[in-house]
Image (tube, rainbow, N blue to C red; front, top):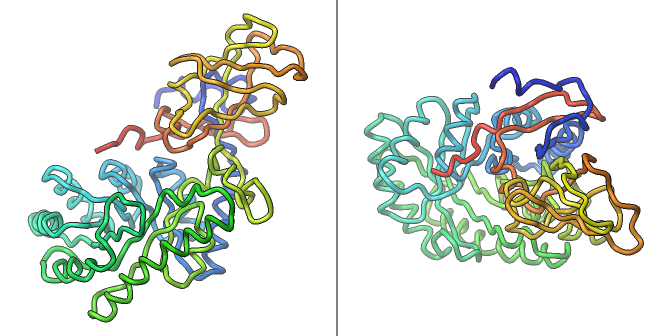
Length: 374
């Protein structure tokens, strides 16, 4: 990183040029420790998902707190983790195509690599790549537990597991059952019910594996919205939470055990923006639009300005509108904080994190896996 990237370290957050991606170092650390403590108490491994943070810096913080390794969705993300010294990576996604398979196989020379599979031809190709590079790759059979995306049906898991067991170059380690949509079911009770239903689907596949004498060393799944229910169930050997470290607007609003706010973890990720125009008393414009805040989960949340709301105004602009009882108009050049609606996709818009403690910028971390979509 060039020297200019380090300008401002030791100075106030308000001096950071915008738009900038902010991380509250203290809140991040507390979130990591809270999940780690849950894992210790529940007796379940924590394998955080690096598709959220996209940097080996945070991966090592999680491993130091007790995480068993990291998840990745893409080979490119796994490459960044392994290059950064992470020794155990699960690619919790199907990998298809010779180029990707050979890249994946080379990683097994440096780290323990496991990959999810849902088709016999994909496993055969994976095994061929592993043999070519004289390595062994771990495999978990991916089970569709209701998401309707990748994965075999629970009743078909044994057949695929037996196929894996017959191949050289791959080692069957167990099963994966992840349901992304239920992570955002509103209301703790409804979310818990959906989590138990998904777990029942995976349990059927686990039972069948055990009856067939197949490996169940690794039973992996769950996420930030269902970590407690699924992680305490006794079914999983490890869980895959990602967003818990940052808590975007979407996660904060899914509801907790005692109210509308999901209070288990703290917001720790923000975008710092500047008022770039004040065209009307009830409307100001920020320098943060679609290029600074993803909108796949709806609008971001303007913080610390009661009565004002954020809406997108284009690629480079965010429009802040004032309700009748709100405070007076904001000043040109004023800095404000905005909470992203979806942390993963917003992070993917930035090259670096600006990390602060209190009101001081203490570090700049590169987001090395940004854009690693292959």
